[in-house]
Length: 386
Ligand SMILES: *Cc1c(COP(=O)(O)O)cnc(C)c1O
Image 1 (tube, helix red, strand yellow):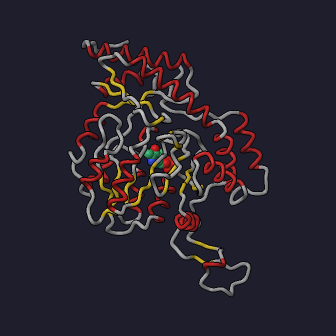
Image 2 (cartoon, rainbow, N blue to C red):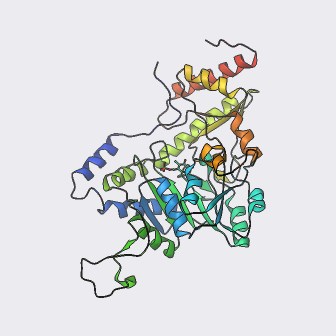
Image 3 (cartoon, helix red, strand yellow):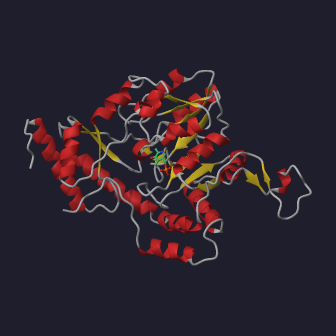
């Protein structure tokens, strides 16, 4: 039996052709496709500046650098996210502070953010979990009152909308981070991007992406260098994206709206299928947002059993996520169990079921039927569900 993954890319002939075109051109990296891709994503999101980087993780690191996060600073983020949303704070010497989630949206709770603010807090990294936008208006109000920066982790949320504008517009934030990893809404294999309307951040991000080096005569310390001359002003990294990845990204971007539309259709079908189920609990979208449905998460009793049975039937369900502070590394830093009760409660029952545009109706019907069957049987005490 063919397995059904929880997520999967959609690569077609036009993508392959675009990449081959780039491979046959003069530039494999640092060519013109990078700026082209950046311009297109910026236009799609309605934001001024975009900087393509080698991964979403690199983008988060660059954002924390540009935000000036340094030793002793605290940055508030969600525990229900991929570890990278918090690791970027550690890279800069800061301390991640976890604010609990809302039970209905699984997103960071603004009320809990308020409680976690101290005089060391410098920024907030809200994560649009599963593609459903956070309460950005509320988070922005808190940030303004306390003089904090906002970096949106929109790794799940390219194509999502909040109060009539696209996620990435940076209307409620200083910077937004995207990921183009293979499971995300569009892919460049590995890759990421930073979006901002702030020119100062933009310049810092560009520099950080390439070792902290500048070739801009306007800001050089030594004005007498020759044409070969460049200066390193910051300790950056090589976080560049290649031109053939940008070619793939541009080709993928053309399909993004269709991808998201298909994801929403799949979500609607799941939501209808499980609406009246007593064993399978769903999370519904709030009124003001349009999720991009990177993931579809349900809540089930006996999650471990449901997980194992579904996998044995070839449905490769997954779990997103163990609260970050429960990771052994974070435990070793002294974070304690019980820190975010809603997050821990959510984690015990959450299950990500297959969600990707390439999934067929038949595959989805199979997932729905199996999940219903498995949950009903476990509920009625049947241990052998074959
Ligand atoms: C995927 C992901 C990242 C990291 O992106 P990479 O491109 O894999 O480095 C960061 N945050 C969240 C929420 C993610 O899902």
